[in-house]
Length: 176
Image (cartoon, rainbow, N blue to C red; front, top):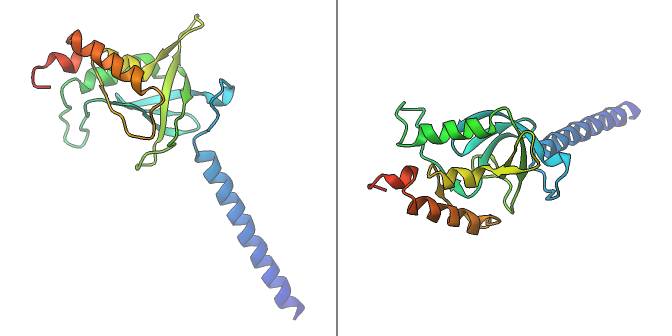
């Protein structure tokens, strides 16, 4: 009888240990919820996937909130107009750089990507570039609001109107 209890205890302990490890691993994948400017909000961009998706250390794939850039169409090899320019601008501003990410209400999209607003640290200065907004202002992204994430909605729409009036990027094409 003792042997049976010991075996049951070992099984229960093992299941609990595995469960705790799984929970801990999942927590590490969650997007941070802090809104203050602490080191936990700073990340390094390791790769740019396209104009609105980057890869950062500690979080993996991050989708920039509030914008939509033309698609690279990697599967068919023919990018949409201005997709390459959007990706190149994102690479120039973010790739290999330190970023501060801000999160909104929803932390992940339906594809599992972390949702964030990105602010690039400008070397040698005490200022940041709002990456999401800079892409819209350059006419390389459209304002793209999906509730409930709306922290910078007004600012992004204002930048889009500015780009439209100046006929920049996607707004220079009469088909848009």
